[in-house]
Each structure stands twice: as structure tokens, then as C-alpha cells.
Image (cartoon, rainbow, N blue to C red; front, side):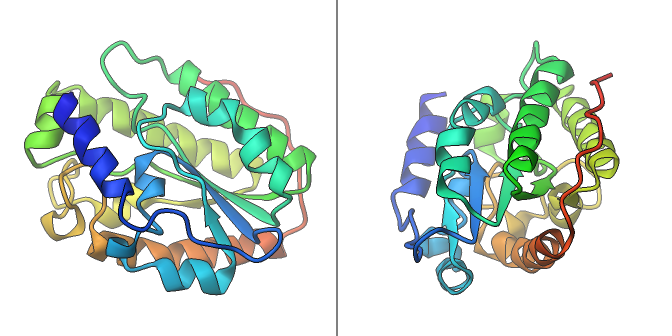
Length: 222
């Protein structure tokens, strides 16, 4: 686990924190998968700057920690839209879907209450590599990822919000691991991975901001 923390800090140390003009148009909230997105090595800094996007991803955070700072880091900045990508740090042994579901529901509810459009993403694949093998070698990891991502897809459809299936964009033929070129370590996208993700993200954000806000009832986790 020490190796995981060290690598995450290294990933975030290179260029995190793109500047934005006034209120950001979009706030990206999440864990290290998000925090690396606007880093210099990821190659997306110009896209963040041109679109007035702000990255507030924090290394190592669970969906509970992300939800706890949502109002301060998103609502308080009054963006037009929020991009939520959370759960990679949740789905370890002992995880309960209802815990992550409740956190995602709370964030979406808060965004909608403040007329902030929402884009939500599925969590990415896991492996191959020494880092994911050390962090969680359990074979059930892939079942937990699939369970959460299936719930996210159903939730997004029920809520009428935009979803980007990052898992499908990044996963290899076995349906579990990353395509090797699209990850730096089996946990986080590489520059090539972010290059695959970003156009789909832009498209979803544009669609979300062009759609009138709707607030259907939140479904419970199964």
C-alpha cells in the first residue's frame, strides 16, 4: 500500500491544478483518476484551459470523502456542470454497493438542487501490473467493478443525466484489464488513455449543459 500512495503522489505532483477564469464552467470532482487528468504529463491541460474546466480530484479519496466536500468544492464555485467520477477507491473487499450508491445519489441531488448539470462516469478497469496486484489481488475485484458500473448506468438513465462509460473505452478484450497502452500502472489512465476519454467527456458535458434540469426521484441501491 505504501507503493500505491507514493505513486499516487508522484502522479499528482506534475502539473495538477489548471487555472480557470472566474467561475469554472465545469468542475471535475473525484479521486486520483480525476486529479491526474489536468496534469502536464496527461496532455490535457490545454483542453481544460480552453473549456474553463477546473480539476478538484484528490488522490486516494473514497466516494464518501468526495461527497463530503461536494458542496464546498463544486456548489460553492457555481459551475454550469459537474463531472463526477468516484468509486475506484471503494470497491475493495467488504465493500457494499449501497454505500457508494448513497454517496453518488447525494452528489447528484445536490447538483440538481443548485441547477448544476451532471455528467457521471463509470470507474475504469483494473490491472494489469504490480500496483493493482498489490492494492487488491482479489479475483472478486472485477465483479465489484462491474456491479458498481452497472448501477451507475441504471442510475444515470433513471435520473436523465449524461454518463460516459470510461470502463468500456479503456478495457481490453478480456473485459477486466486495461488495454496496456491506455494505463500507466494498471490503475490510472496514461496520456493515451486520457486522450481516448476526453472527447467523449466533452460531448457529454455539452449535451448535459444543453439539457434542461430534471429531478426525477432517486432510486435505491439494490
